[in-house]
Image (tube, rainbow over all chains, first blue to last red; front, side, top):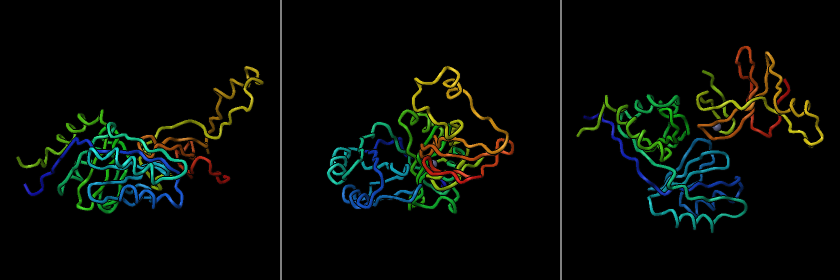
Length: 173
Length: 92
Ligand SMILES: [Zn+2]
């Protein structure tokens, strides 16, 4: 099926919570440690290869990387950052889904009040919002696919929800 | 359903993402031990509950998880401004 929706996950990634008041040296320090540019515009994220960095609030970001990288990235952040900050390994708290295909947007529309039209939700945008009566962080990627990052305790439920929401245009077997 | 402009996210978001956190700008008494029961009770339990302009705290619970100030008309539900906690509200 050419318009099939591909659903992957839930997948465990390395996830680090970064809390720091923005200051002039912060973007360079984070970029040095993670190899990803710090998103300072609200509701945006940056990616570099398999790594992602998501704006969660004016002094809060979520860094993601393939599972296993958490200790090295945490150490890199701790040695690069100065001043008052907090870096916490929250890998166990989050699970990631990926939705791809030309009709993935319709699956999102069934699940959340946010506007996912490409005019409103360009690649690079990320929102934390209500999602299928749970909550999730939804990010639009450059290839037109979406990452849905949710609490681990919601992951089983959301997997089932997303499967049913994509039934109208399922992935080919 | 209201749309509330979150001053941290910088955009209007659905009311579903927010929770209401009561009247804003209620100052905790400097020295609660010096208050009599009536004054302490007033601080804890009594709110202005106006018909019209009302300064409120809201929490962007499903979004950026920050508290924000909202000026809302309790009769029309019209929200005339929102601003960050700690910023001064404009006079109305
Ligand atoms: Zn917000």
